[in-house]
Image (tube, rainbow, N blue to C red; front, side, top):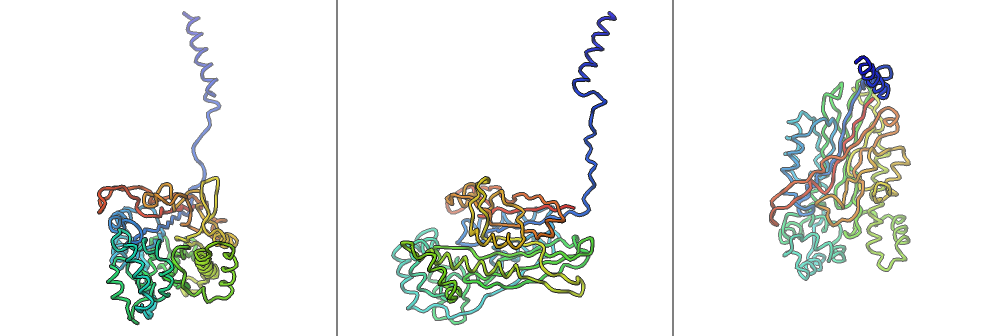
Length: 422
């Protein structure tokens, strides 16, 4: 009996020794100090571009519901909130969550509208291809009538795209020989919303805004400045840079820049059809100019905040991004993204797509993945904070549309959220 007891005791001690025993057990309690500051921010292009991004009408209440249930985001930058009704609904939703909300109301500029002479070839082309009878009149016109579209001129094309929910007859009624008509798509609004939780600041949030040189779509930036717990001013910029198209003719101010014109023509000269290449080159140059404007941004001084200076964060759909082969990301206007990197800015996310042709239900035919939505951090921020990023707003929903019941993403863009601690 004693032998069995000794044997059992020996086995127990042997097992304890194999598992490290009590003497070698490590204390796994996290003894690292709690962060003294946690800051969260996010950017999301909600894609409420009616008749341009699919299912905008059906998605709109889903977008508002996501915003109503948003948690743990201190600074939020939204893009493509184009209509007055949507701006009001988004503002009320976010204010109900305790945000201070800044919307910069722009209306663009007025031009000469259209003449029958310059619009007739476009009307004939739209009729020839039966675009009005399709579910996507705008897409049909872009795909089949780009030459005729270029003949419209800047002011006429801008006016016709003022409200894409109109019928072609309504567009012409608004634009024909109308010198008071807007020359900009979406009524000349910039589509931006910047929302900041007041509790992150030791003083009232200081909001600001500015405009950027652009064609067809009015481009702006919003700024929000707050005082952190150290009494230092911190500034976030919310923006949406020019998209680079090859199918939509570029009829803007870059065509009058002799250097840009010469460079674009030279870059595309060897192609069998250089026209679309030249248009893309003009859009790229316009976007580069906007980036340079942001890089030069200095908010100066304020009575309450003192010297504010350059921004600390740039958030938004920047329509450019890196080529990251190991993550399956295809570069988009890489030379412009590199301008930001060379100036000392770091994107919090360069590993997960936000414009996801392989995942997004709206972009099911896009075919490749890109990261073009960014939370950019200044070099000072990178030096001070630990940074973690995650993709948000990437879930799918079932909706009922004219096509019946189907599955769609919340937007054609997924969002990015960033947590900074120190």
